[in-house]
Amino acid sequence: QVQLSESGGGLVQAGGSLRLSCVASGSIFSINAMGWYRQAPGKQRELVTTIATGGMTRYADSVKGRFTISRDKNTVYLQMNNLKPEDTAVYYCTAEVYIGGTSGVRDYWGKGTLVTVSS
Image 1 (spheres, rainbow, N blue to C red):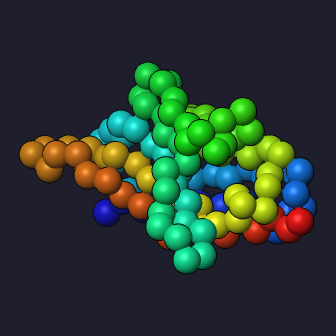
Image 2: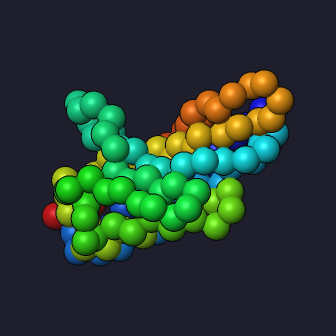
């Protein structure tokens, strides 16, 4: 009913930049927070950044000052600057979606987009 589709991943050299996008579509009444998580090979998925409906943002310490999250309605962006090899991971978009009625709010996830940073 709700789909999240990420794009913008790829291969970049250390110090470079990438911009990820994620569009939420489907039976959406409203979206609360949206965000990005990442999972590096052999590691657990970790929070990168979130943005609430009112615009409040939260960042992992490892990306503060380098990554910027922004949102336009049902689309969330992640501008990644000064990328480092340790940023290599699959990046997942997530959204807290209310589909209306008595369904409550549920978290939805995209399938992920791979970001590879070469040294």
